[in-house]
Length: 462
Image (cartoon, rainbow, N blue to C red; front, side, top):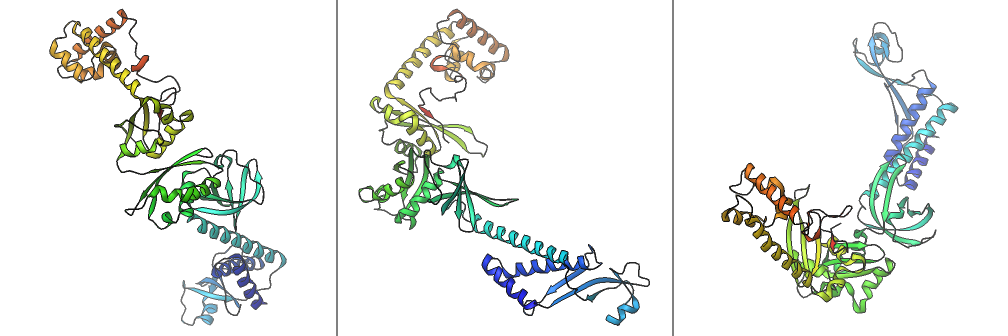
């Protein structure tokens, strides 16, 4: 019977893909629990059991302390009993006494079975987790098993993947039995075993598809440097060549578009723009806005982000006839360009920029004249205010005392007088836009990000 136990254990280990030693340890743990139930050892932790891996022989030992008078026979032995086992034993020594394994009763056998099954399940779960944790960020193939409240459960061999509705391509329909590819978004341990979350909308899925379908990318001749998607509708991918003379865009498109069409079909007809990556941010932004033609690109350093990097924004000027193409349908082209480059993109036409410059010059001329009339403000102070960007009463009111105090030679009392004079001038000229209105608004309308125009010409990065 013991030999049969060895054979069955080895067979289960092979079928379940579990390390044989893990299963033997589970059997030992189960038999030890069962042994304690059939004896008076109770929950004593001084007992160990060993199962011989070759013969199946069971041996049980109890570790006991040597005493003059035994009060608890489960953990104590007299000196006379001990010396029959260890001739030179002394008081307070600890020795191991071999016990005779008893035949398991029904309850003990059931306990052993439950312990073994639980350890097998735990080992299976750990094996699945170990296998899939290394596949995060990779593509896996599976079969749709069932659909629960629009969430798709996918069979992935020994494991099941979870494809939430939010990670499915809009309008995509799946049925049980369909074979699909998906991106492993996250693998985490739960009480019910490893949970494998899949995605078909993640930009990484698109990048991995490029690696799978385009040999030059798989070989490292062409690299995918960035990807941005609005799943099911449109995507942009930035590629670069590592070898001179290799056209990265041509390699990805393939002869008559055959390669890119395969990827597009996998994404349910998603339109894919391929642009060449550039180390220069301005050049990269101009290419990211393709197919629109760009007149100029100006990079602005923004505030410092939490990770210490500088958030950058970019002003893109396009010819008037390219404005709608640069923005795209519902601002899609601008949004994707922002995601691809990681910068905030503000798009303006040449005529709009010219109008802004004209209005600003008018404001500068009229504002300077107004400031020169303020009591106590001489020509030198006017120059300092203009140099610091405070060239109109409107800008002075908008800046407030803190910025006025930063102007060289302006103290607190002087700053208060200048601010009061600017406020009086604005009150006397109600036709001039107040802060929050017009082209010089201090803050955007409620619910709208700063710098984002109502027609979505400014696209923040994802």
